[in-house]
Image (tube, rainbow, N blue to C red; front, side, top):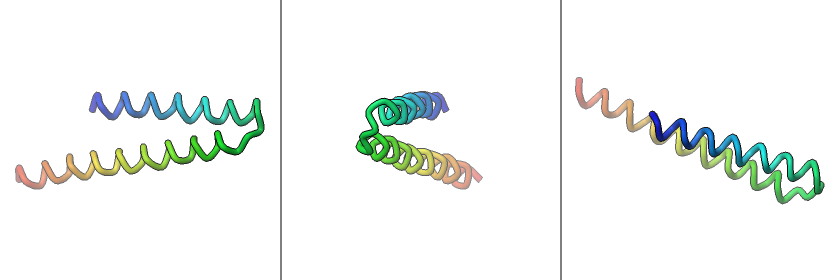
Length: 60
């Protein structure tokens, strides 16, 4: 769970800085970067949660 917290914090920082950079420069590259970071972070969280669920099912 510590890994999820670290990834969540780094993701929030990356998305926030991407949005802030977009607001300063008006370059859509930063919005695409923030979107990509969010997408891959969501995929990572889903994989970790599926592994935790599979672990519980195997133990039962």
